Image (cartoon, rainbow, N blue to C red):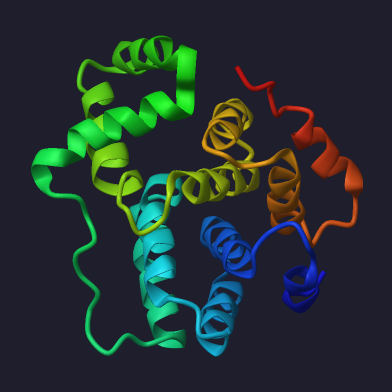
Length: 209
């Protein structure tokens, strides 16, 4: 399915669908698709800052090497008048905001997830809360609902089933609808005609606490 047809679909705002497409393209290292997303965002006068937030979020879901290339490719397709900067919460507020977002996403499972992270490595839980959540995901440039929609798109694209389920629940906690989750999946797997793929991922969406 072409991007034009995807953008005509109801159920997800155009900017949100482009952000999902962009992050999935970064995971797949599909740089022509990412450049197309950039050009469409610019042509539609969408705020470039939202796409910059998506690029920053790609560090968490796609890794540093892909994120570096993504910034390069996106910048070539949609040049910025000057290097973007700022947008993070003040340093003294980041950890508290990260903790609050983490708890909002995981709900009653928050304590057990924290324990799991600590069990992987003594420093890992602090890294996740301080860097992933406090410095990136809690940035106010995108609200929590949109960031979780991006997360489930990236996790589905990268076949991370367990984490997909956790973040799908988090998206619902933060106000997303099941239909929006479906549209994210339809967007991520638009190039695959098999409806069973989307159905299988939707089956993994848990009930809201």
